[in-house]
Structure formats: C-alpha cells, structure tokens
Length: 415
Image (tube, rainbow, N blue to C red; front, side):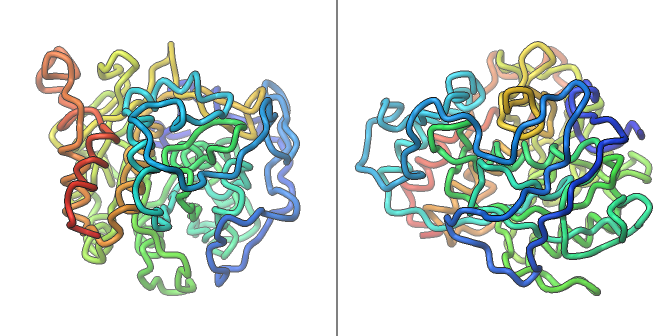
C-alpha cells in the first residue's frame, strides 16, 4: 500500500477488510439512466460481505428507533437552531461536526426559503455502494480504473462503478456526509436532498492513476471522454477526497490541472481534501492545482491535527476530527452501522455539502461566486490561526454553513 494512496482514516486498519473477502455481484445501473428523484432503490445491494473485525449489516435500512418522517418536507420558516429544524436521526446528537459548521442554523434558513432546486454532487472515490441513507438519490456512475489488474473487478473501465476491495466504503461515507437523509434513522447529512453520482477512480488498493482521475473529472462534469458514454447526470460540485498516486509530490500534475481547468470553465466546483501527511498541500494533485477549493481538517477544538496538510494552497478548513474523536457517520461496513474516521477525506465533504445547499437556493451561481460565498462564509480560527506555526495555515477559516447561506439568500446573484 503506497503512502500516497487514497485519503483514509489515519489508522488504515479502521477501513481495511480482509483481502479474501468475497465480492457479491454488482448492482449495475446503465450509464444512460437518468438520476432518480426521491424514489426507493430496488434489487440487491452490491455491498461486499464483511468478516473479521467488522460486524456485517444486512442490505436494509439502519435501525429506526423512532418513526421515519417523510424526507425533508417543505416547512414554514423556523428560528435558527430551533428544535423544529433539527433532524431526529439517532446519530445526529453525536455529530459534533454539524454543530461546528452551524448546520442546524443553516437548515432553519434553508427550510424557510423557497423550495430548493435539485443539486447533483459527484463523488470521485472508491465507487458505488447502495447506502440506505441515499435511497432514491444515488446513481452508479462510471468506473474509470483503466488497469484491469488494479481494478480487480474483471475488467478495466466500464459502466459499473461498484466499489471493490479493502477500502470500498470510503466513498460511501463521503457521500453520506454530504447527503444522508433526515429520516429518523442513521445519520444526518448536510444537504438531505442532494443527489449523488458515484465515480470510481480508486483501484482495489485505494490508489489512483493520474490519467484515470483526469478523465473522471471531465466525465463527472458532463464533458466528453473518449471511450465513455456522456454522463447523463452532470454534477455542479465534484468531491475529491483523494490525491493522485504514481507521481512525485512536487506540484500539480499537468494532466490533472488541464482537467480542473476544463471543469472550471464549465462552471463546476472542484472540492479536494488537502492530504494527510502533515505537509504543504501544494505538492499534491488536485489539492495543489489552480482552481481547486482545497480543504484541510480541524479537530473539535478548531485546531489543525498533526496529520492535516497545510499551506497557501489550502482555501479553508472543515471538521475532519482526530484519532481521539473522529467524524461520526453511517456506514454499512461499521459495527452497529456507523464509523468514526478522521482525516481530510472527511473534511472535504462538509464543504461540498454546504456548496450544494447554496446551489439549491441560488442555482445560477457561477463557480467564482460560489467559491467566494464559501471562503467568506467562515468562522475565524481562535486566536486568528489554526496552528501555533504561522506557516502551517488552514485557509480563510472554518466553513460556516449559516453565514454562507445567509449571504447567498441576501443577494439576488445566482437566483
């Protein structure tokens, strides 16, 4: 396993599954399928069987301690942070990260505004898992792992993006952080109406080839890629909780920079995790690429954990946790249906989720306007910095969902 592999929790053992675990048949959705709108998924899940240190969960909804309300019905305006705006999902009480970014206050504003427009977020990661948290709002997009040997699914690129291998559930958790339903079970996502397209870029070992990532960026944004069908569900936000392997960590790879430039020209926002090596993020791709909104981690105390990359390439910070207190999230792979990972992988989707909230109320926002709302809508770090060393900077501040959404709603830009 390369040190420069996919951003996982600091302890890779938290995520690794035994190599001998069998993979059940993939649940394939045709590449031409339109993104479903709040309809339940049917058919078997593709989730691998789990063994060893992990408790297997059935392919069924997570335990429901309270009756499940209809997902996110339109409501009258409610005071910020009021009980009426809060999810009843059982894990919500332990999701400190949502309170850190003032998500409850943002939801009150959001629920009191005009009906939100649908927003599609692409998760470029380990691939598709049929999470109950996303039922009816998730699509098995495309598999861009070109090397059949590293893909470990019997072929190279194809229209089945199902997750394979020890880190299969990394992408599931990222997607759940962005968009898990507020339905009285499991966790609460930042935008419970966002729609997710899973794009597989990581091989069975969690490693990512630069050209595979470059092509996946273009495809996810709706641009043409030779040999692949056109994406019928182009995304406005691309979440990349990863960085490219097999290249020196000396700056943005030219292939990936060209793809980011093409995606940016189409008005699509690229959000990337900064990296988990405790180093300057500028050497990483895409974190060090021009036009990327790069996100580093802070702990519950608002400080940069030692693992989190830093520097001038970092745009802002979001909760990523630390080994003592991670980010609580639903996962089919976790004991009791949950995980508590930590890393910049889990910081990035907080920003992607907030970006999708802003686009849901201002769907015509340009990429630049969206970026400005996110980087200006922040909570300053205590004492003005996230780390005692001024060189180890964390960008503009901690993402503040309430402030960013309030600024968007106060303006007619993007309406």
